[in-house]
Every structure is written in structure tokens, then in C-alpha cells.
Length: 265
Image 1 (cartoon, rainbow, N blue to C red):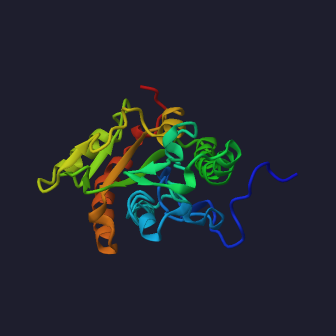
Image 2 (image 1 turned 60 degrees about the vertical axis):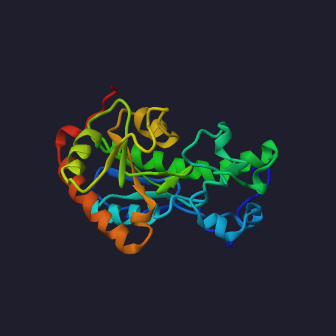
């Protein structure tokens, strides 16, 4: 029997999930919740001009490229969302009003107004659940094999928000588990040219986004979110440069065997 509610994806639409380096051996998983600005054809661009979807409201600019590159550098798999955060935000609880926003950064999203419950359920079933099922399956496979995995969530942020210039090039977001964030903050801050945010420009204590909270915190896995400023990683050369910088900082930390334990701080 077909699932109830509207069918969002047609044969020409991309998959809801992208999995990179699936066979990589490292007990590390990278995720990118806002990797894509694609909208299913059936939703007619959500009533937005194409250039609006290219802005930060549609996706985390540069985050997908950096995630793919960093996964390769760390020899780890990565799981990326296949559709725009405006279709449904994979880092928000589905019941949260911001999950399917009627406006984003002051820009109305006509295709999200007054959605019927079955339309919301279709977006969750089609775009949200496959992404999180893929993350859960990878983590559970690693745990079943006797490996405690690390979860790294990759995001990007705008250089200016509400007229305020953001000075950070990178931010490390975390809450109660210091195993990854504290040594990474120290490694990045060893470079005096960097302004490194500790739960800036966003905080994982508000609480943490859905992906970290649901997959890592609940399982007691070491984890953090990394936020990169979009103007620094939007172009390929910037993404490559920041991949090298992050891989150099993360590699010695990820080599510590004591990291790979289940803990519930």
C-alpha cells in the first residue's frame, strides 16, 4: 500500500540523502544537515525566486563541499541532506515551527504557508526521516562492530547578521561533553590569526540541534558541531584551505584512543 499523503519526489528528483565514502574505515561520521538548496519539483520552488534559494536561507553555503573534502581527508564517511532546509530543516525537531518556516531572515516562503498536516508529514517522511535513518544506521553499525563512533556536524554561517559583522572565522559548538571541543578549540586558537568562537555565533546550549542531540548525546558519543564562515568556504580554494586546516587540527585529537568511549556527562 502506498504511503498516505502527497508524493513529493518524482523520478527526476535527487535522492533525499547523499552518502560519501561509505566504505571508509575511520570510526568517525560527518553530517551536513543543510547541504543542499534543492526543492522537489512538485513544490515549484516553494514560490521563491531561484536566487533566493541560492542565499543562506536555502542552505549552508559551502558546507557540503567542505564536508565532502573533510570526509576524504579524515578517511571517514559523510552523510549529507538532499533537500533545502526550507523544505524541512533536518536539524530541527519536526514539531518546531522553524522546521518548515513560513519566512526566513525576513523573506516570506509562500510554499510553506498554511500547510495541511498531511503535507507536513509528507516532507518529514520523504526528506527528513531518510537522512536521519541513514545516520542512525551508520552509527549503530559501528557500535555493533565494537566501535564507539565520533559524530562531527558541519555547518556554515553568514558573515553579517542583522547588520552586525561577525568576527569569527570558525565556531565550535558544544554543551556538556568536552572531549572533542576543548582540544579542538585549543588547536585552532594556537593560530593567532584566527578568531575562534566557543559556542559562537550560535550555541549548542540552546539546546543543541536535533542531529547532535538525537544521535550523539542520546548515545553518549563524542561529538561537536563546526561552523565555518560562508565567505571563507564558498569558493573551492577556500573550502580546500579550511579542509586542510581542520584536518590538521582534528587528526591528532581523533587519534586518541581514550576518545572512543560512551559517556553521559
